[in-house]
Length: 288
Image (cartoon, rainbow, N blue to C red):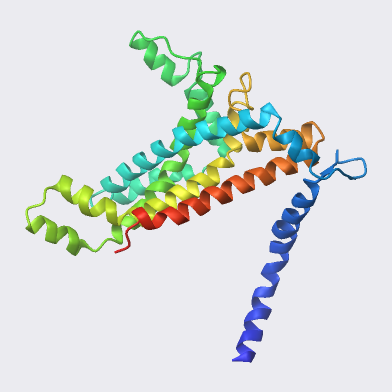
Protein backbone atom coordinates (compact mmCIF):
# COMPACT_ATOMS: atom_id res chain seq x y z
CA UNK A 1 0.00 0.00 0.00
CA UNK A 2 2.80 2.40 0.91
CA UNK A 3 4.64 1.47 -2.28
CA UNK A 4 1.55 2.29 -4.36
CA UNK A 5 1.23 5.62 -2.57
CA UNK A 6 4.87 6.45 -3.32
CA UNK A 7 4.46 5.50 -6.98
CA UNK A 8 1.28 7.58 -7.25
CA UNK A 9 2.99 10.54 -5.56
CA UNK A 10 5.93 10.29 -7.95
CA UNK A 11 3.58 10.26 -10.95
CA UNK A 12 1.54 13.29 -9.89
CA UNK A 13 4.49 15.29 -8.52
CA UNK A 14 5.41 16.87 -11.91
CA UNK A 15 1.93 18.35 -12.19
CA UNK A 16 2.54 20.34 -9.00
CA UNK A 17 5.42 22.25 -10.60
CA UNK A 18 3.28 24.34 -13.01
CA UNK A 19 0.53 24.54 -10.34
CA UNK A 20 2.91 26.09 -7.84
CA UNK A 21 4.80 28.20 -10.40
CA UNK A 22 1.83 29.64 -12.28
CA UNK A 23 -0.99 29.63 -9.71
CA UNK A 24 0.02 29.42 -6.07
CA UNK A 25 3.13 31.63 -6.18
CA UNK A 26 1.43 34.39 -8.26
CA UNK A 27 -1.49 34.37 -5.80
CA UNK A 28 0.87 34.78 -2.84
CA UNK A 29 2.78 37.50 -4.72
CA UNK A 30 -0.49 39.34 -5.47
CA UNK A 31 -1.50 39.27 -1.80
CA UNK A 32 1.89 40.69 -0.76
CA UNK A 33 1.86 43.25 -3.56
CA UNK A 34 -1.55 44.57 -2.50
CA UNK A 35 0.16 46.04 0.58
CA UNK A 36 2.88 47.75 -1.47
CA UNK A 37 3.46 50.35 -4.15
CA UNK A 38 5.26 49.26 -7.33
CA UNK A 39 5.44 50.67 -10.86
CA UNK A 40 7.15 47.54 -12.29
CA UNK A 41 10.47 49.42 -12.54
CA UNK A 42 11.30 51.05 -9.21
CA UNK A 43 11.93 49.12 -5.97
CA UNK A 44 8.80 47.89 -4.18
CA UNK A 45 7.68 50.16 -1.31
CA UNK A 46 5.62 48.80 1.59
CA UNK A 47 2.59 51.03 2.29
CA UNK A 48 0.42 48.75 4.43
CA UNK A 49 -3.32 49.28 3.92
CA UNK A 50 -2.81 52.36 1.75
CA UNK A 51 -4.04 50.69 -1.44
CA UNK A 52 -7.20 49.42 0.23
CA UNK A 53 -7.94 52.80 1.81
CA UNK A 54 -7.65 54.44 -1.59
CA UNK A 55 -9.69 51.67 -3.20
CA UNK A 56 -12.71 52.28 -0.98
CA UNK A 57 -12.69 55.98 -1.81
CA UNK A 58 -12.00 55.50 -5.52
CA UNK A 59 -15.06 56.15 -7.69
CA UNK A 60 -13.61 54.09 -10.56
CA UNK A 61 -13.70 50.96 -8.40
CA UNK A 62 -17.41 51.35 -7.60
CA UNK A 63 -18.20 52.29 -11.19
CA UNK A 64 -16.40 49.26 -12.62
CA UNK A 65 -18.02 47.01 -10.00
CA UNK A 66 -21.43 48.38 -11.00
CA UNK A 67 -20.70 47.70 -14.68
CA UNK A 68 -19.65 44.13 -13.82
CA UNK A 69 -22.95 43.64 -11.99
CA UNK A 70 -24.89 45.11 -14.91
CA UNK A 71 -23.16 42.70 -17.28
CA UNK A 72 -24.00 39.70 -15.09
CA UNK A 73 -27.61 40.85 -14.58
CA UNK A 74 -28.11 40.98 -18.34
CA UNK A 75 -25.99 37.95 -19.23
CA UNK A 76 -27.00 35.27 -16.72
CA UNK A 77 -30.80 35.12 -17.27
CA UNK A 78 -30.39 35.24 -21.06
CA UNK A 79 -27.69 32.57 -21.31
CA UNK A 80 -29.52 30.28 -18.88
CA UNK A 81 -32.99 30.40 -20.43
CA UNK A 82 -31.70 30.23 -24.00
CA UNK A 83 -29.43 27.33 -23.04
CA UNK A 84 -32.35 25.64 -21.28
CA UNK A 85 -34.60 26.08 -24.32
CA UNK A 86 -31.92 24.57 -26.57
CA UNK A 87 -31.32 21.68 -24.14
CA UNK A 88 -35.04 20.87 -23.93
CA UNK A 89 -35.34 20.99 -27.70
CA UNK A 90 -32.31 18.75 -28.25
CA UNK A 91 -33.14 16.28 -25.48
CA UNK A 92 -34.71 14.02 -28.07
CA UNK A 93 -33.29 11.85 -30.79
CA UNK A 94 -34.23 13.14 -34.23
CA UNK A 95 -32.55 13.50 -37.55
CA UNK A 96 -29.91 16.22 -37.34
CA UNK A 97 -29.89 16.46 -33.52
CA UNK A 98 -26.17 15.63 -33.32
CA UNK A 99 -25.37 18.28 -35.92
CA UNK A 100 -27.41 20.90 -34.03
CA UNK A 101 -25.66 20.09 -30.77
CA UNK A 102 -22.28 20.52 -32.43
CA UNK A 103 -23.43 23.74 -34.11
CA UNK A 104 -24.61 25.21 -30.80
CA UNK A 105 -21.33 24.27 -29.14
CA UNK A 106 -19.07 25.57 -31.92
CA UNK A 107 -19.00 29.22 -30.67
CA UNK A 108 -17.80 27.99 -27.26
CA UNK A 109 -14.50 26.78 -28.73
CA UNK A 110 -14.16 29.76 -31.07
CA UNK A 111 -11.58 32.42 -30.17
CA UNK A 112 -12.90 35.61 -28.59
CA UNK A 113 -10.94 37.55 -31.21
CA UNK A 114 -13.03 36.00 -33.98
CA UNK A 115 -16.29 36.30 -32.05
CA UNK A 116 -15.65 39.96 -31.20
CA UNK A 117 -14.81 40.88 -34.79
CA UNK A 118 -17.89 39.00 -35.99
CA UNK A 119 -20.26 40.79 -33.60
CA UNK A 120 -18.67 44.19 -34.17
CA UNK A 121 -19.44 43.64 -37.86
CA UNK A 122 -22.99 42.36 -37.21
CA UNK A 123 -23.73 45.27 -34.85
CA UNK A 124 -21.92 47.90 -36.89
CA UNK A 125 -24.07 51.04 -36.71
CA UNK A 126 -23.22 51.84 -40.33
CA UNK A 127 -24.15 48.96 -42.59
CA UNK A 128 -24.19 46.14 -40.04
CA UNK A 129 -26.62 43.27 -40.57
CA UNK A 130 -28.85 44.17 -37.63
CA UNK A 131 -29.19 47.86 -38.43
CA UNK A 132 -29.64 47.12 -42.14
CA UNK A 133 -32.53 44.81 -41.26
CA UNK A 134 -34.03 47.42 -38.92
CA UNK A 135 -33.68 50.03 -41.68
CA UNK A 136 -35.77 47.83 -44.00
CA UNK A 137 -38.48 47.79 -41.29
CA UNK A 138 -38.31 51.57 -41.06
CA UNK A 139 -36.58 51.56 -37.66
CA UNK A 140 -33.55 53.68 -36.86
CA UNK A 141 -30.95 51.28 -35.46
CA UNK A 142 -28.99 52.20 -32.33
CA UNK A 143 -25.26 52.88 -32.17
CA UNK A 144 -24.62 49.51 -30.49
CA UNK A 145 -20.97 49.23 -29.37
CA UNK A 146 -20.29 52.89 -30.27
CA UNK A 147 -23.06 54.16 -27.97
CA UNK A 148 -22.71 54.53 -24.17
CA UNK A 149 -26.29 53.27 -23.83
CA UNK A 150 -26.00 50.25 -26.12
CA UNK A 151 -22.36 49.23 -25.66
CA UNK A 152 -22.98 46.93 -22.69
CA UNK A 153 -26.01 45.24 -24.33
CA UNK A 154 -23.80 44.65 -27.39
CA UNK A 155 -21.19 42.87 -25.27
CA UNK A 156 -23.91 40.89 -23.47
CA UNK A 157 -25.43 39.71 -26.76
CA UNK A 158 -22.04 38.54 -28.07
CA UNK A 159 -21.24 36.81 -24.75
CA UNK A 160 -24.58 35.00 -24.61
CA UNK A 161 -24.17 33.82 -28.21
CA UNK A 162 -20.72 32.43 -27.45
CA UNK A 163 -21.54 30.75 -24.12
CA UNK A 164 -25.04 29.44 -24.75
CA UNK A 165 -23.71 26.16 -26.15
CA UNK A 166 -21.77 25.47 -22.96
CA UNK A 167 -24.84 26.07 -20.80
CA UNK A 168 -26.89 23.92 -23.17
CA UNK A 169 -24.40 21.06 -22.83
CA UNK A 170 -24.44 21.15 -19.02
CA UNK A 171 -28.25 21.33 -18.85
CA UNK A 172 -28.61 18.64 -21.52
CA UNK A 173 -26.42 16.34 -19.42
CA UNK A 174 -28.64 17.13 -16.45
CA UNK A 175 -31.79 16.36 -18.42
CA UNK A 176 -30.43 13.03 -19.61
CA UNK A 177 -29.52 12.04 -16.05
CA UNK A 178 -33.16 12.35 -14.91
CA UNK A 179 -34.71 8.85 -14.67
CA UNK A 180 -37.46 8.67 -17.34
CA UNK A 181 -39.64 6.63 -14.96
CA UNK A 182 -40.59 9.82 -13.09
CA UNK A 183 -41.96 11.50 -16.18
CA UNK A 184 -43.62 8.34 -17.44
CA UNK A 185 -45.37 7.79 -14.10
CA UNK A 186 -46.58 11.40 -14.07
CA UNK A 187 -47.91 11.07 -17.63
CA UNK A 188 -49.77 7.89 -16.67
CA UNK A 189 -51.36 9.79 -13.77
CA UNK A 190 -52.70 12.35 -16.24
CA UNK A 191 -50.13 15.14 -15.82
CA UNK A 192 -49.81 17.48 -18.79
CA UNK A 193 -46.49 18.22 -20.50
CA UNK A 194 -46.44 21.63 -18.80
CA UNK A 195 -46.98 20.05 -15.37
CA UNK A 196 -44.27 17.45 -16.02
CA UNK A 197 -41.85 20.22 -17.04
CA UNK A 198 -42.45 22.47 -14.04
CA UNK A 199 -43.17 19.86 -11.36
CA UNK A 200 -40.67 17.14 -12.28
CA UNK A 201 -38.12 18.07 -14.96
CA UNK A 202 -37.04 21.52 -13.76
CA UNK A 203 -36.90 20.59 -10.04
CA UNK A 204 -34.72 17.57 -10.87
CA UNK A 205 -32.57 19.79 -13.11
CA UNK A 206 -31.65 22.09 -10.21
CA UNK A 207 -28.20 20.46 -9.58
CA UNK A 208 -27.17 21.34 -13.16
CA UNK A 209 -28.77 24.77 -12.78
CA UNK A 210 -26.82 25.36 -9.57
CA UNK A 211 -23.56 24.45 -11.33
CA UNK A 212 -24.33 26.77 -14.25
CA UNK A 213 -25.13 29.70 -11.93
CA UNK A 214 -22.02 29.29 -9.77
CA UNK A 215 -19.64 28.84 -12.71
CA UNK A 216 -21.24 31.69 -14.67
CA UNK A 217 -20.98 34.09 -11.73
CA UNK A 218 -17.32 33.22 -11.12
CA UNK A 219 -16.37 33.44 -14.80
CA UNK A 220 -18.32 36.55 -15.68
CA UNK A 221 -17.28 38.64 -12.71
CA UNK A 222 -13.91 38.27 -14.42
CA UNK A 223 -15.21 39.34 -17.85
CA UNK A 224 -12.42 40.96 -19.85
CA UNK A 225 -11.73 39.55 -23.33
CA UNK A 226 -14.93 40.71 -25.01
CA UNK A 227 -14.80 44.09 -23.27
CA UNK A 228 -11.20 44.65 -24.36
CA UNK A 229 -11.81 43.55 -27.94
CA UNK A 230 -15.24 45.08 -28.59
CA UNK A 231 -15.29 48.35 -26.67
CA UNK A 232 -12.02 48.78 -24.79
CA UNK A 233 -14.08 49.84 -21.78
CA UNK A 234 -15.75 52.68 -23.68
CA UNK A 235 -17.41 54.65 -24.93
CA UNK A 236 -17.09 57.11 -22.06
CA UNK A 237 -16.24 54.26 -19.67
CA UNK A 238 -19.70 52.72 -20.05
CA UNK A 239 -18.30 49.17 -20.25
CA UNK A 240 -15.33 49.53 -17.93
CA UNK A 241 -15.35 46.46 -15.64
CA UNK A 242 -13.25 45.31 -12.70
CA UNK A 243 -10.72 43.12 -14.52
CA UNK A 244 -10.17 45.78 -17.16
CA UNK A 245 -9.41 48.31 -14.43
CA UNK A 246 -6.99 45.84 -12.82
CA UNK A 247 -5.13 45.44 -16.11
CA UNK A 248 -5.10 49.19 -16.82
CA UNK A 249 -3.79 50.08 -13.37
CA UNK A 250 -1.11 47.40 -13.51
CA UNK A 251 0.23 47.94 -17.02
CA UNK A 252 -1.00 51.34 -18.27
CA UNK A 253 -0.74 53.40 -15.08
CA UNK A 254 2.14 51.50 -13.43
CA UNK A 255 0.14 50.94 -10.23
CA UNK A 256 0.64 47.23 -9.65
CA UNK A 257 0.01 47.46 -5.91
CA UNK A 258 -3.32 49.18 -6.40
CA UNK A 259 -4.24 46.65 -9.11
CA UNK A 260 -3.34 43.80 -6.75
CA UNK A 261 -5.57 45.32 -4.04
CA UNK A 262 -8.42 45.51 -6.56
CA UNK A 263 -7.86 41.87 -7.52
CA UNK A 264 -7.98 40.89 -3.84
CA UNK A 265 -11.34 42.62 -3.49
CA UNK A 266 -12.57 40.77 -6.58
CA UNK A 267 -11.44 37.49 -5.01
CA UNK A 268 -13.26 38.32 -1.76
CA UNK A 269 -16.44 39.20 -3.67
CA UNK A 270 -16.32 35.95 -5.66
CA UNK A 271 -15.59 33.90 -2.54
CA UNK A 272 -18.50 35.50 -0.66
CA UNK A 273 -20.94 34.95 -3.54
CA UNK A 274 -19.86 31.32 -3.96
CA UNK A 275 -20.17 30.57 -0.22
CA UNK A 276 -23.63 32.14 -0.15
CA UNK A 277 -24.68 30.03 -3.15
CA UNK A 278 -23.37 26.85 -1.50
CA UNK A 279 -25.16 27.75 1.73
CA UNK A 280 -28.47 28.43 -0.05
CA UNK A 281 -28.39 25.40 -2.34
CA UNK A 282 -30.03 23.21 0.32
CA UNK A 283 -33.17 25.33 0.01
CA UNK A 284 -33.77 24.85 -3.71
CA UNK A 285 -31.47 22.17 -5.16
CA UNK A 286 -33.14 18.75 -5.39
CA UNK A 287 -31.05 15.62 -5.84
CA UNK A 288 -32.92 12.60 -7.21
